[in-house]
Image 1 (tube, rainbow, N blue to C red):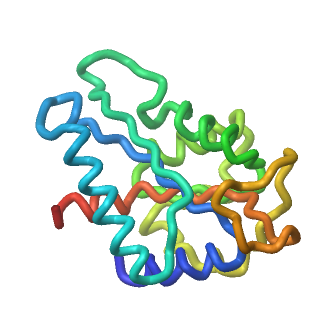
Image 2 (cartoon, rainbow, N blue to C red; image 1 turned 90 degrees about the horizontal axis):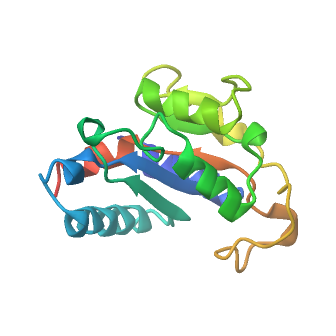
Length: 173
C-alpha cells in the first residue's frame, strides 16, 4: 500500500511497537507451507527495512477453519494476547489496524470487549491522525528486547496490528 512503510517508519520513530498478526490458512489447506510463509516474512522484512522499519514481532495462524476451530485464528485473540503478554502492552492504549472485520473482532476481544476506539480497518479511516498518537508508557516493568538505543522515556507501549501487509506481499512472492 502506498505510504504504509513511511507511516510505519514515522510511528516506530515515535516509540510504537509494530507487530503483525495474520491468518495463513493456506498452510492448513496444504497450498503452501511454513517455509513459504518464512520466505514471505523475509521479503516483508527486507522491503520494510529499505524504509528503516523493523517489525518487532510477526505471529501467524496456520490453521484453516474447515479443519476445526482454533484460538489463534482471527477473530480469535490468542496471538494478540501473546504479543500483549510478551511486550507488556496496554491494549486499552493501543491501536489495531487491519483490513477485515475479523481483525477488528480480534482487537476488541484482546481488549476484553472494551470498545472499538483505536481499531481501524483499511478503507474506513485511511489511518488519518495515527502519526499524531503518542505512545503511552508500558504498564509492566521490563524493557522491550529490540529497544536498544531508545530512550527510557520513549519506551514502546502500543501495538499496531497490520494484517493487510501479508496479503499484499503474498502476491509478490
